[in-house]
Length: 243
Image (spheres, rainbow, N blue to C red):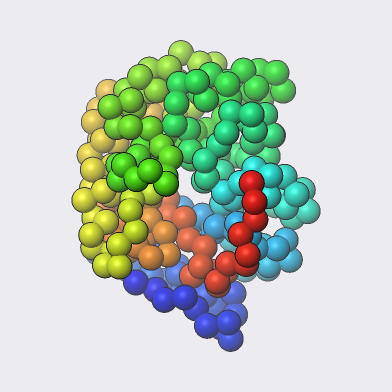
């Protein structure tokens, strides 16, 4: 596990350390670093720090809240990076999310899928890549679709014009020992494999968005293809921004 980086270490050095660790984890799990997308989680961090990350080579950025991203993404540049919404999406913010983000990781209901598709049609967006967030930990403080609801969400997406299901995402419970999160990552991979066998994914492979600063090594060992890392790159977060 990578500890919170000291402030004295530069962002490019922290980023390079994370990339080296991803490559080492990938090697242990018979993958290559090129198969794993690093999403640098920039929530609560200011535009100037995000620009520094982009200058250091970050190409994918993750934000949790539409309202925060609404002010930040235009300041950084809509086309400056590939923007991922990784936090819970309320239906009443679907329109702005479709305008701001390249990928949405937190689709969790048929209702939201249909709302996103309608918005895409209204603003003439042709394709919106989405991942279904699966609630495997069943924690009251976290969102996501119940595993039993995933098949009907997959079926609904298949009937929509603009949404493209590219994978699954999960956020397991926090454990002091990251090894305890392994069963949750493994189950998401198993579920992905089941759906892939049914031809559920637009890209045929099925992305696995799982793992953060605390536990991304374990997630990669269990097959993660997208890791969402904030603290190890940007350092300790600033004060929480309200949604």
